[in-house]
Length: 128
Image (cartoon, rainbow, N blue to C red; front, side, top):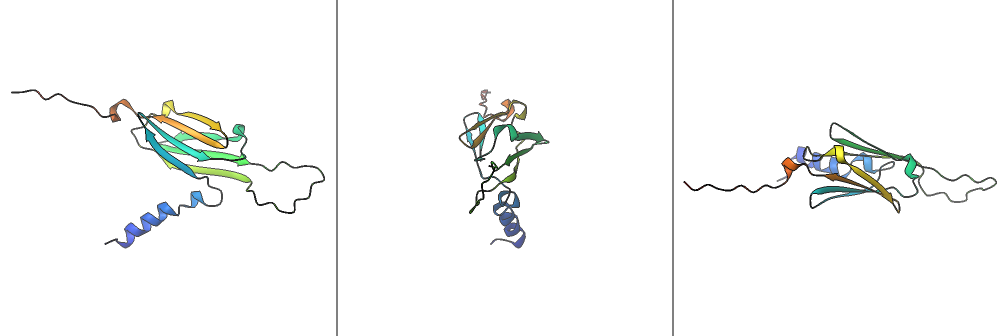
């Protein structure tokens, strides 16, 4: 049975306002000893991308601009322009000091190594 508060939390995550309008869609996954986030930022100048981490909150901001051409009158202008942002709450098990950011073909890929203390460890059992 789903309680009202549980449902509210679930829908808040699913329909988070950071993904509507000015937000950017993302995929997040772990591969080996690194955590990856791929964020769609098509049409963004890489120089406009700002990536910050403050107290385990990752914030990505960028700006999409329309190239203005003298004498051009747009009949249809559906491609979004303006500021784009997204925030992700990161685990304490990630080494954000070693974050790597790369932009290729409209996708910003962030790679964050998993800390040594968060990696699986095997312990030997001593016989009595």
